[in-house]
Amino acid sequence: MTHPKKPDVFVTRKLPAPVEARMQELFSVTLNRDDRPLSRDELADAMARADVLVPTLTDRIDKDLIEKAGPRLKLIASFSNGVDNVDVNAAARKGITVTNTPNVLTEDTADMTMALVLAVPRRLAEGARFLSRAEPGEWQGWSPTWMLGRRIWGKRIGIVGMGRIGTAVGRRAKAFGLSVNYHNRGRISPETEAELEATYWDSLDQMLARVDIVSVNCPSTPATYHLISARRLQLMRPEAYIVNTSRGDVIDEEALIKCLEEDRIAGAGLDVFENEPDVNPRLLELAKKGKAVLLPHMGSATLESRIDMGDKVIINIRTFFDGHRPPNRVLP
Ligand code: DGY
Image (cartoon, rainbow, N blue to C red; front, side, top):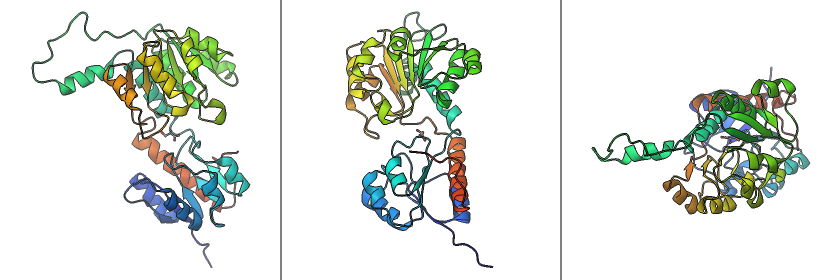
């Protein structure tokens, strides 16, 4: 009996060891042992030869690269939830299927969002930084007026994008005594709305003007590019905070920086940036001044999430080569 040839799978970044081991059992796989982001030429070369490309969000798989892909490339099985880095339309035109890894990073990303919702108003990063840099005896002890932040309990959160992650943020926010507000393309189910005691705002502008903490949880698409624009940032209350664990380009970062520098809003917690991995130096300055808490895109950074993401990639590849529709196909 002849065995079908294993698909040639090219993985662009180092993945957790159990995922790589399983891939090696199942596929003819090329791994990136040094975890170095690949150049455009290296990506083009991989796409010319492989049956499957497994990129991550650090690889920009644009129209040009897709159009030049070799005839063997049939599947782009992204190791990511968001696929804003892949030109899904160009892939469809070329007959290449695209898949992603949804659901498995929802809770971890929601945890990190909530961590920022707490960290920014409660000055957690400033406090931790103070002690991590303190000389013995430098801390003079508790003081009634030192390191005062703002209370979370009883405040209003406004979630922009009430998909899986937004809803998981809503659950956490409710447990922390925040009243849940949301803006979304459509309303969530009446059951979930009731569970969260959530208020739906058809008008994003009106919600932004009303809430104390804005949490950005919508994907990056052409429609959400700079959704939180300079004009919309002006609508926020001066005591309000904004948190983003989605994608940097949903917020007009330049406008946000200006707002923070001019004290027109109280602070920001950002896990994502417009030009990752470059972080605007003015944001780094704002972080030093306690106006921003910045994280290096850590929303899904747990071993569990990353292994589950790898499992999804594997299932998508296997299903595809078994001749079925992969479970996490992304439609253009
Ligand atoms: C994703 O996969 O889209 C996440 O941003 C990774 O953290």
